[in-house]
Length: 130
Image (cartoon, rainbow, N blue to C red; front, side, top):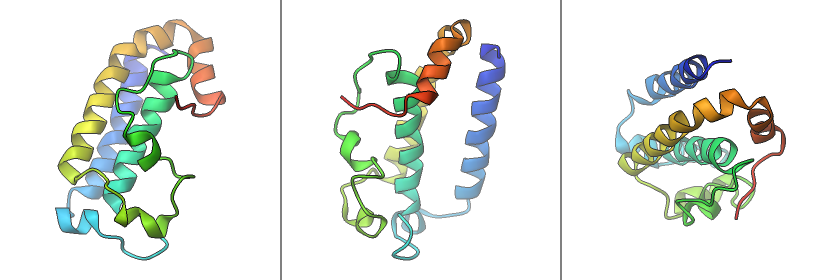
């Protein structure tokens, strides 16, 4: 897959996520709807967190640029019911974070597209944190 095709797929997925969240205000994004769900803003940042883990760190040896987020957005570290009590990013902060991650991913896409092994390893090894 070419870098342009990869970028288009990533952008399509992001636009769908944004379309789902756009009708909601900040208060709706930051409160849990039920004890079985995280606040939606947590899920938004979680998407960026795993994009960073899989496409920027894995197979690249790149350290996290956002060490403080490693624990917050690791879905195994916190039950859904407790995520609204965590010092999670605001909706504005979460959007900035996922935008920053996406920018770095788009810069890395030519490298990933040239090396099928790097792309495959990024997704097959699972996330690694430092």
